[in-house]
Amino acid sequence: MILPANEENILIASKIIKEGGIIAFPTETVYGLGANALNKDAVIKIFEVKRRPYFDPLIVHIDNISWLEKLTVNYKNKIVEKLIDVFWPGPLTIVFKKSEIVPYITTGGLETVAIRMPKNDIALKLIKYSGFPISAPSANKFGYISPTSAYMVYEQFKEEIDIILDGGKTEIGIESTILYVENENIYVLRLGAISIDEIESVIKKSVLISEKIKSPGQFKFHYAPYTKVVIFDNIDEVISCIKDYKSAVIITDKKESINLPNNVIYDYFSESGDLREIAKNLFEKLYYYDKMNVDIIFVKSVKEEGIGRAIMDRLRKASGRYALKL
Ligand code: TXA
Ligand code: MG
Image (cartoon, rainbow, N blue to C red):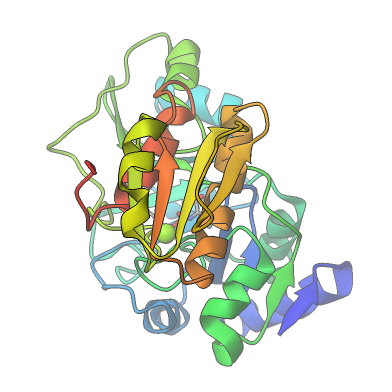
């Protein structure tokens, strides 16, 4: 059931969390599927409902820095403290060594735990009222597009989740950036809402993209619609092959006037091509056209700068099954 995220319903949802249930709620990035992160049986339900492999760990959401002492061991490090100071609450997830109270089911069997403090009042209240940190993956079936609205969650789970708190469309639209700090080195495990440039300008050193240290959840196919997605750079290449399809969608980064045959639907992510707006609309548009059952979705690539890197990461994974070339 979708419920407006008012005070009363946040309280009802927090009661479900306290009692070991799961609910869906908005964050500033995407909607999450939440349970008490410290309750093994509750966390197992997330994996079951989402059909997620158990080795793929969950992010633990907190409302208060004081949880770090309890959930982690030796979290104090100058770089980490700086990152927290600048980016929390916000879409930055940091991987720490876990303490004993964090169950292995939450961390996919790892000795580390990924933690973030969301910048969304509904999420923060939910954590506060339930009295526990909330482990929450994106509220989609494993491998499918992450939801940016309550309706996208509902369509995927129907009555499998008792309560979906509706906080409207999420502000950012793609997931948090995940970092791992080891002594003086900072590795990015997942590109996301906070760009590497932003992080580097705060910590005044380079962030490493490591092949060695990886997030177990970084699969080649992910965030993927059932419909074939193909990324293109040049519209002429698309136009030369588009007659081969009964129905096709072309989505560009910014509004353009293009002459297209009538088997083609044209759309754009942002009128001006603003990268933040593209991120915000990305999953929603892919979801919408996936539901429309067209033969193919062509998506224009974006500049790989700032949040554009995370957008291209998501697009490549959405098109993962297929060659990136036409
Ligand atoms: O924006 C977000 O991060 C959203 C919202 C709901 O907070 N959550 C999200 O969760 O994207 P999920 O489960 O879809 O992705 C979590 C990623 C996975 O790739 C997982 O492998 C990684 O975080 N992860 C979790 N714990 C980890 C750990 N201890 N070490 C390395 N990677 C970890
Ligand atoms: Mg996810």
